[in-house]
Image 1 (tube, helix red, strand yellow):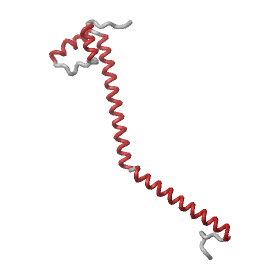
Image 2: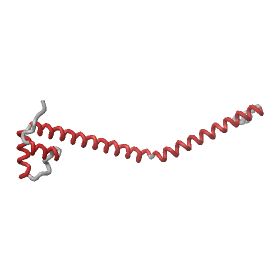
Image 3: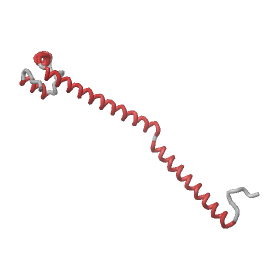
Length: 119
């Protein structure tokens, strides 16, 4: 069975504020605090909204930490430099393959392997 708010006007005001009275002046806060003491529905809604708020804070903080770790890793490992090294390595391997292919072709035509030192 659904709970009913004991003071509907105050309950609707609190719902509009997402059950957060932390920004109110202390003299205005007293009535709302008393309402939370008396009304189980509004108290449970306040707990739910606080749980959601803290969950969002944790998720946002976690994503900020992951972002900073990724940023630090990028700054540390410098992927632009790594990309250039990979391209240079591929180029060197391509040149070595071309040299081997040319040597194989010369061996087929001449019978001698130019890669082996002359005796």
